Length: 216
Image (cartoon, rainbow, N blue to C red; front, side):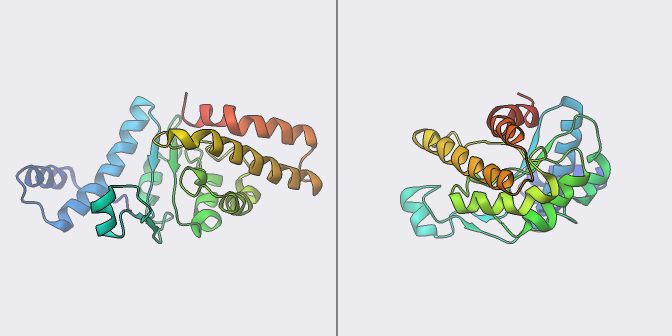
């Protein structure tokens, strides 16, 4: 995942070659990186929220995917890099008023090293919560431990869910609220938050924050 710009003439040439089925792998990779920049530019114009979901090898076991289809359990995390990969995009649009970029990832190693520091500086970045896909209590606690010290709660996306799994949504909401409440209680016990601040944050993570981040 990178966001390197192309010369407009080169982008147009690769696009035409792709339409004709003649683009090389290197050309399509360069075009994809360029189009991430274009999507960010368009988000600045139309106000739509941009999300990124790198860091996973979908359908790692092809026989399982062929027999049962996508989302059948063989999606495996990959190592991903955000700091340099997003720099061309953020140089152009990272401080643009109204631009919202929400990066999600399965790579837990970047939560504190890259995503939290990026969101701590760039007003456009809100770190996507992991329980859209890392929907396990310990994964949520690791995420909160990794990012809260740097960016608190206001620079995260709040609770979001994958609506393809309708039957799991009530259980995910319940689990998320319980784990977040536990983390907030931990901060209260350590005198990092007052109890009234924790109650306000608990409500905001479920309702206010997602509405603000995704402009709902």
